Image 1 (tube, rainbow, N blue to C red):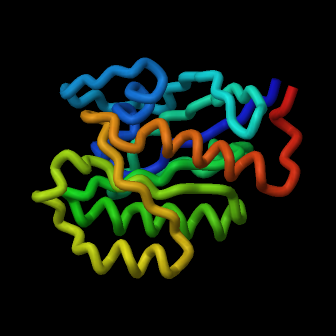
Image 2: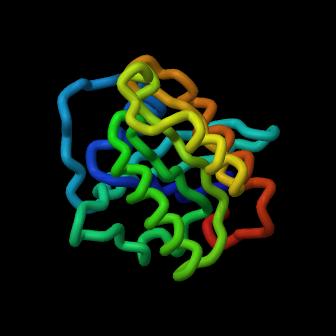
Length: 173
């Protein structure tokens, strides 16, 4: 069976832990839980006719003066870059993380999740920005850990991208 490491990256409070909880356990807890360091979950999925064990690394959110530890991303097969649509600053953080990943590690399969779609009417980031990001090569999905909107699709889509990427055999069994 294949094993693939996926990192959850983004600012603090964007919903990384909630997205993992919704995907792995079909649960949503509206209490905020700060991730300290890394929390690892796993889930077996079937994508493109293959069983894949996803090792989900829910990493502490990036804050001013405390950047994401990219050494933990080096051996990942891919990552989900999470933005909170209700907080414009989280887009800036995501862009910074993405630039650093590419500069320090290189290109890896990733998707951008614009979380909190259930609060769409309070989003601070205009729709035109999403079009610009898509035009620059980012694939974006609107998600809601609360409602479950596009959560499973996000993880399965990234897994499919990982399987289609050039060989990355170091984490396969």
